Length: 96
Image (cartoon, rainbow, N blue to C red; front, side, top):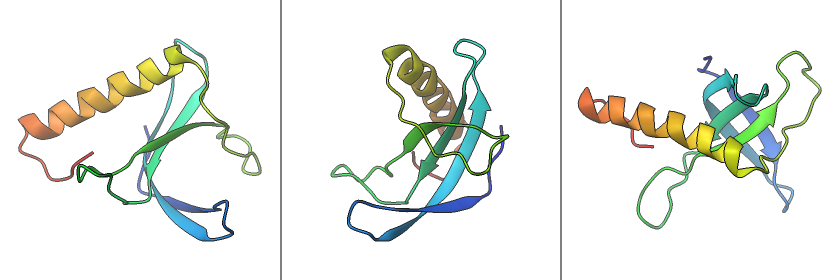
């Protein structure tokens, strides 16, 4: 998994939004690469919003693709749950 980088995208209103990459990974189950990222905005419960997309690490000009299957979301959710549990068990810093 990689992290520590940022990227920006233009939203539907033409505003540039800066995103922080939390991690990337390749799933053996789906054979696809995923990127998990945040814009540091919080939801109504005060949790930092996290997004995920399919990406192609070998093509810097490719666009992020929507995740469309429940199977893919379950893979991502499992990783997020595991990371959050590790942070809580280690008394670590950031909310997800």
